[in-house]
Length: 324
Length: 285
Image (tube, rainbow over all chains, first blue to last red; front, side):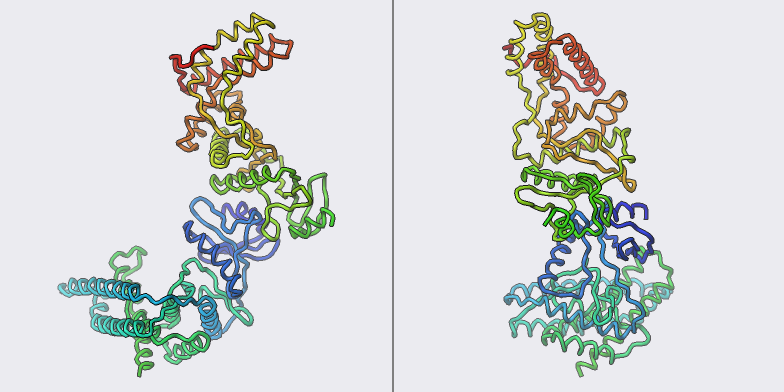
């Protein structure tokens, strides 16, 4: 990295060695090891991150890796159009993946529990949210229906198109299930007249969590937002289910571990089920395939889609099992 | 608690040793300790330097924060700040483009950040200069006449006059650290913008002046470009000549210096394509 010396000068650190891990640079300096994150945060997101640092201190929540300020008191270092920030490097070592997952679920429940905020019930805003979700999902479904109609007109379908067409009926079934659970959520919320938000990490997955000795730490709060806890749980469950070696018991036990610390309301469970049933990530695969911005090979698209189908099947089976 | 203990405690410096009257050796390198008596001046410099870095990315001798995140430490009625010390062997004196960008950044920030004791907005004291010129009539009629003859041109040059906030500039104090420019500001109150501009354009080579000026005009905020041009064209050398002649005996040398500066400024205006309008807009007093 060309300007590493100039960036670390802001911290009075002298780099000795560095290794790149995606957007993070592990920098060994004369005063310890640090993680330098390269981001494209906007001014608003920088302010939000700054607010979060203080918010966590206020809540006395320790499950995050703090940002190190420069010697001039700045939280971020701006280099041209990039925004950098520095955190202490926490070495994870060799950790049992299931133990890490357990720690992560527990830390997530803790984060949600610390930051939970009950809101005054507003029928209008709940209705607005419901209508917005229905419109968004229906328009997405319509796009997919149009896509499948187009490809079915062809004599020969490509492997990706064939895979999609084969599973299309199942996807639509999931959309219906998702819609019915959203309807339940809407009815129940109107009955219970309650609504709460928590601080959602936004990208809650094993790659944004470092397992420590007794506890773990979340990193990368760049996408964090105040929202329903369901948002984080959906992301976490989708990213945690391994395709082709799926075990429904793990998901059930993770959920009960989460709920032992932060119990979901009945209507939140319906919303979670609605999110999980909806095959958004599969629809996204179609969009990726048609635009192919990542320049993937055709077979890679097929493999990616098949894995997602497996994940969706696993989640759907568990949800139906839990419902039963 | 003595000052060494205060610095060690507040800034978390380890192995601290005084190297010189205001230099300290710490575990994070050599630092400079600055003493301030005027809190408002200190806060002006604090904001000025922080803005210079955040708005234009120019590294400068900003205040290093204490462990509590404070930019200075108060001891009785005075204040202490700690700064980086940059090796003077890395000094740079031949980058007119960067110099132009630096001056533009300094002027932009001073425009946003007025100094609390801001009396000098750079308004040309024409009436006062004419009064002082009248005093010369008795003292030396020859130079009086010569300076009176310059009045039409003075008025022409004054048609461009615009006010500008004073700014912090200490001449060429540029260094390079880790491949980036580092500018050392002084602890003095800001000085008149016209003096800063004239000081900055005090090059021997015309090409350097032009490069510096082009970079300055390119980097300055749109609203300030006219003020900057006005500050350069205003006939400050004429006023300085009158002022110096009031008490000095060596009038010939003063006049000679004035003539030289006058010619140089006119040539500069010509070279920089700054038009001095021919029409008169001031009445003679």
